[in-house]
Length: 256
Image (cartoon, rainbow, N blue to C red; front, side, top):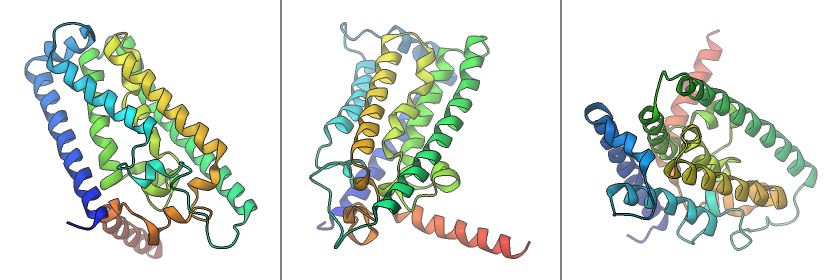
């Protein structure tokens, strides 16, 4: 298999399948032995090794790779690096870049507002004892699955708010861990807070890079993230689905 983009796609599909299995495993224990899920709160880093140590290590390793930016990660994540930046032929319009940044920042704030409002509902339900630790942990694992589903298949934030052309060009590509672990903020334990606050560091790392070098995050000023140069091609499923959605939307608007 010589096609590197195909390798990347297969690797991401395998990761998605493993997240599906992880979610259904946690869902199984939630339905039939909820105390195991609640034991996440009692997790201790130093102590007898348990499956929780493996889960925590996998989740933490995922965030560490986003901070270190290894070469095998996708361009969507690594586009902010100096090594991956490819200036376009000729010059680009700085004013157009500024307008793009302002537009994307505004849309990113909308996503953040929607996300915080949504999860504040679960936070209030937790504070009023309508739901407990197990429900918030299950919700977080569900978000963990949704993260790759958004990249590979369908992303409501891309479709309805950000309206970016693909994940490689996404302004909030590396917000995933922060969004995954938002429900864990409400649970006071090492397992939950270590994941959530590390996710905050990943988010800050991304935002600092975006603020310092916005030209690396726009296809008009970075040739590396143009479709013709994309090394990832993770839109193999999403693009056809998006085209079907756009056609239905066009037909619906014409029939009004």
